[in-house]
Image (cartoon, rainbow, N blue to C red; front, side, top):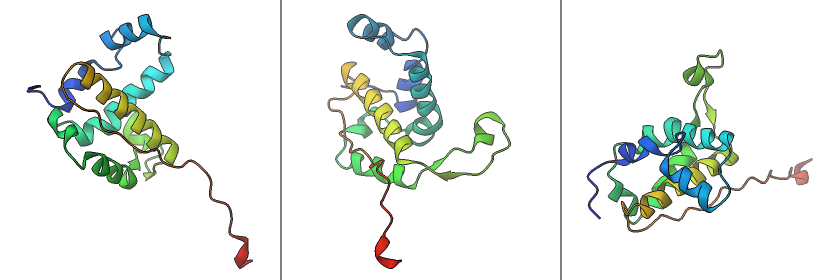
Length: 141
């Protein structure tokens, strides 16, 4: 299981149009829709590679990676729109739990593909973030 490349190198072909894993998945199941493909690719480029890109693939197998990944997501802020597409909104904001779950899903797919390609021996398991809105506390009214 000796893969000399890092996470970023592995990501060069994932979720790009015509990628082998997308062609394979289209043959075995329902093809991925274009908006879904571009969303996964965007999360790889905007969130995963900037943080995890230089890590060797073996890093994602070590004990404690799941906790480190979750802690990273807890502190992560939304990439300001101005940085993404040169729009006027340049403010960073905490990520919604929904977006955190989308990033978890993308990382899970990335690691599943790495395992399928025998770049890692095991895929990390992640817990989802709650998307329930907390009820207002009426006891202090």
